[in-house]
Amino acid sequence: MYLEGKHMSILDTISKRHSYRKTYKPDPVPREDLVKIMQAGLDAPSGCNKQTVSLIGVDDPEVLAKLHAVIDPPQGETAPAMICVLSKERIAYANRCFAVQDYSAAIQNMLLAIVELGYESCWYEGHITDEDRICDKMAKILNVPDEYNLVCMLPVGIAAEEVSGPRKRSFEQRAWFNSFPTEEEYKQIFERAGVKPPR
Image 1 (cartoon, rainbow, N blue to C red):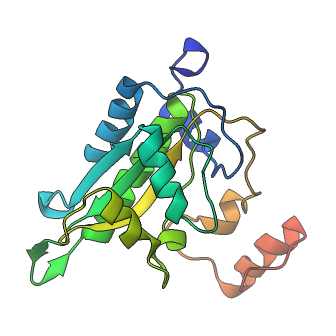
Image 2 (image 1 turned 30 degrees about the vertical axis):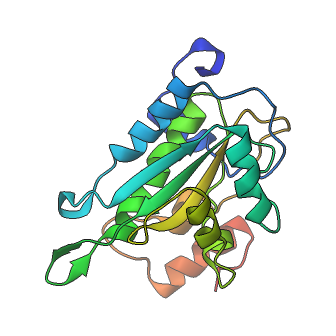
């Protein structure tokens, strides 16, 4: 389902994307849209092409109910679909592994594809991977082998409420050309905006 039947430019999609933590409409997400979103994730860059990312799309209401039964406090529970991101550590070279970079790139690709197709989502990682290890309970429900880590869940659905995002600092407050600004220049940038520099 393309938003209003039209494709957005990639730059429009990037600026439109916001983390959505509100209620979703019950409309199901067609399997073909989930495939497009997941393929976008698999097409992301991968360090040394080790392809450490795997994905599980969930659109079965019974499986979704089992997953949400272990997600406490609830997050994305009204979404009609979910994508779970799996990561498997593989050494690229010199004892280095780029699994975190791999799945981060895959998630960003999927978040953009989700918006492009007219849906909303939110990157839930810390909530399920902290000391409560909700991710392990989810992995068990999904029959994930021990050598994979479930690192993130993305609810997917049509927003039932207004989509908005936090105000971000301006371009000149976060990006420069050819050199980091001097201490005085940096201070003046924020003074012109009437705000204090971040700590």
